[in-house]
Length: 223
Image (cartoon, rainbow, N blue to C red; front, top):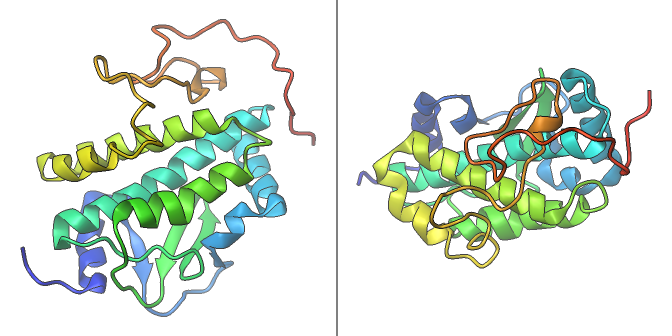
């Protein structure tokens, strides 16, 4: 495996697609914020409301699930991808990794890329577990851990067999080990996609077909 620096590693990852792309160098114009702010209620609520408007849904938990899934997918893509490319996980520190929302997606940027700790520490401990805890009043933690696991599987599929060992090791973490059925690979929780206008179920959904949509008693977004 070549001895690559973190910036070169991230540059190479861009060939896998937008989920593997992190900007580097001088911070470009725009409303960039440290990813630490995603734990703040006001920031979360604004993002969830904007996501819900684009999706045409009223339930905050549905929009929050979609938003979180996309963020988790980007983090795993970069973390696992950097291990596959360079043998080390890039640093995803909450104050150094920046984000901004653009056309419904969270774009990421690192002004001074460097390698960090193990992927579970960078993604689970440093990023996603605190967000799951902070968002629990909007969407169930079990659902978000399911999203975390599903996003990890998706990143591994794009990277191919070179990522298999990395992904398998990450699934030994107790927070992920029981999120998928080992026999079928299906989730034990649903991401709520069936409650969107598109409906239907995902490939790893625990439901074989979309359940009948009923009025949810949880919070809805108000215009």
